[in-house]
Image (cartoon, rainbow, N blue to C red):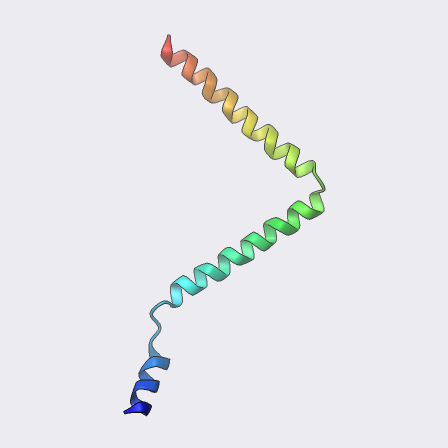
Length: 67
C-alpha cells in the first residue's frame, strides 16, 4: 500500500504549472533588478518620463471628453 501511494505521488504532476510560473516570475524579477542596478538611475528617469507622458495624454483626453 505504501509503495503504491508513493508511486502515485511521484507520478502526480498537478501543481507543476504553478511551480513553473513561479520560477519564471522569480527569474523576471531578478532580471529586472539586475537591469535597474546596471542602469544606475537613467532607466528610472526614462520610466518616470514615460509615465508622465501617459498621464498627460490621459488628462488631455479627459479634458476633451468633459467639455
